Length: 129
Image (cartoon, rainbow, N blue to C red; front, top):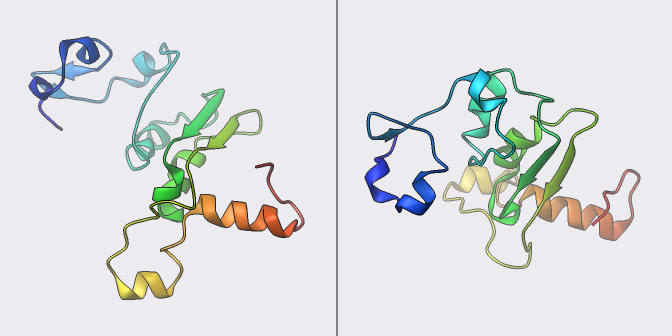
């Protein structure tokens, strides 16, 4: 939880704050919002709250900077009728990976980069890019 005092009042009115700290609203409150903004990691809290399939759209911004497992967390919120979109430029800054073992296992390549590469090859099930 972070201190809400570090956020401008114009933005703070769109945040859920309790006792001066950012906090997760109740599931009932989350279901009333038209838009929910979360990091890839914090999307796991929405998933744990049972909100898989609740959202009509899941947008992952800066997806080229997220490691593949990170990007899959918000993607897991999607259901059959959910629109899922990844935004970013795979030719710019990629995931920050400091572990040689993780790099050796491909975690230095983002999910977005893998999807773009797959679409360029035209493989079966290639996504629309």
